[in-house]
Length: 296
Image (tube, rainbow, N blue to C red; front, side, top):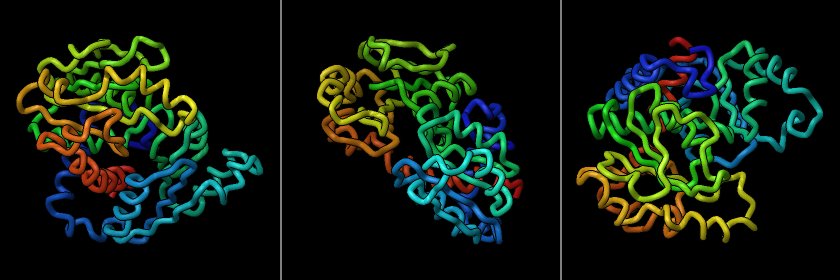
C-alpha cells in the first residue's frame, strides 16, 4: 500500500489483511499504543466530518502519534492562492502521512501524485474507502465471513459509499444488489460488473446485510430535498424490506442518518441494527490503515 485513494487500490489479500489487523488491534489495543510514536498525521477537511475526524485523531493519539487538523478556511490552496502540487510537496516535507476529505476526487489524485508521503482518502464525491473497510470488518465480525454473503443496498446509489461497496463486492466475491430509482441521477457512476441492479424490493430477497445511506449528501442543495424524498420514498429501509431479507440479517448505515427518510426509526434503533458497531470500528480500521501505510 502506497496510498489509499480507492478500494480498487487494494487487492483481496490487502483488504483481508487490513480487516485482520483491525480485529487484532481491537482485541489488544495496548500492544499498539506506541506504534506511531513521533509520527505526524495531517488531516485536511473541506467538508464536514464527525466520525472520520474523530476516529483518525483518536487513532493517532492512542498510538502515541501527533495530529495536525487543517481545515479549508485556513488553506491558501482552497482559496486559489497556491497550487495543489505545491501544497502537496510542502506537506511532504513536514508530515509522515496525510488524510484528505474533499469533494473533488481528481484533486485528491493530483495531490497524491505530487506527494512523497502516503495519502488517505477520507471521503470524496467518488469514494469513501475508509468507511467501507471498517464496514467490511464489522460484517466479518458479525457473520464470520465475507464471500458468499448477500448485501443489498437501498436508496440513492450515486454516491461514494455505494461506489466503494461495489468495488469491494467485486474484489471479495460478495453478492451485492442495489435497489434505487430508475432515474440516472440515482444510479452508480462506476461499472457494476457482477453487482445486480433492481428498482424494487426484490433486491432485499435473502440478503444477509441491508445497507442504506443518507438521501441528502453534502453535494445535494436543499431546494432539491422535497423532490428527492418523493422519488426515493419507495426505497426507504423499513420493516417490510427487512422481512424480505434473511431472518438473521443485519442493518447497516454509515451515518449520519435521518430517521423517517432513508430508514425508519424502528429499523435503525432495532435489534438488527449494527450502525454504532460500524461507527466504533472506524477507530480500529483507521489504526490499521495508518500502520499499513507507514509500514509500522
